[in-house]
Image 1 (cartoon, rainbow, N blue to C red):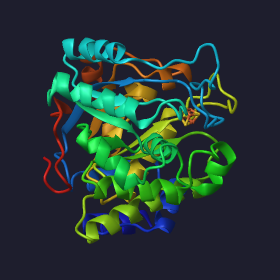
Image 2: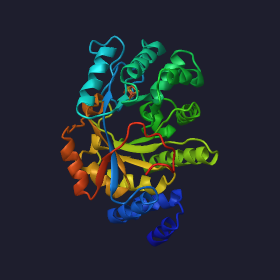
Image 3: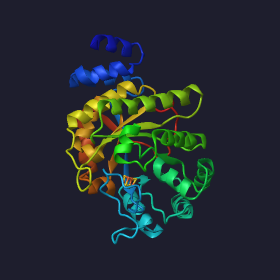
Image 4: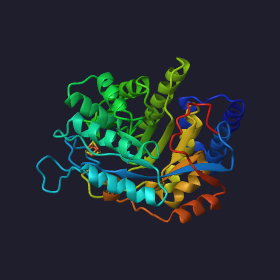
Length: 360
Ligand code: SF4
């Protein structure tokens, strides 16, 4: 079977779900790494990788979604709940710009007190102050959907307002595992797979960019992981076959089990790397596969040998830090890990928005 799959990949063909399941259960780490490199080479030079120096800015920790795997949220009225103002956000941006960073992600919660005006004011002020020198993920898909519904706006209406405020990206965060069985168990208020995917389509149709994401290591089954990969691949196929913009990238990271209701144990880096390779092999229609330094530290750079071609060097993310992530801020050391893994690295330009097929 392994040779048949290798031949398929070398001919530019894709594997089906049964073959993905077979690979997960039977292929060695070395075999997965080697197969992932065949698909990676369709898009990227074998010894090159790109990165961003970025920070997540957590603008509020108040959230009513109550996902059981979350270590970050506070309920409305909790003493340690917060909402950040513009001056706070600017100081976070300035700090990273001063050390060479240029990319920011805004991530908070489903805060019923914050209406769309808060976000529009924040994002338009950032654009006014920094122009195109920096780029940012305005929100995650699920935060965006919450705000639109809270304010009784259609996705289309809300997206037009965000665009007008200078927003170019809404990240695919909030996907975790795209299987309704998983979402019902752990995050029933965080929208169904259909609601999530329809919103991603709306974001792209509005002319904004978005990304694919996945988080593994909760209690999800192999079936649920494969459901996720299949949903993402089918979505991208439908977009590209219709001649429309698709997902820019796919990033998988791992669940951290500390300080939350769900608890559990962390999966091994080996399991993460195997999943990264499987994602690269299966998601043959997404050009950028990103490895998670935030949750895997040094092992993430070994992910470049398991199909990934891009990574973030994170400066801060309260959500994952509260759940147990440890951030290393020594950029040279992280880039050194990539070199040890056999890769030349270069900083990715902030305004990289090229569709599939144009980035090299
Ligand atoms: S994971 Fe996000 S949506 Fe879920 S409770 Fe935490 S902040 Fe809220």
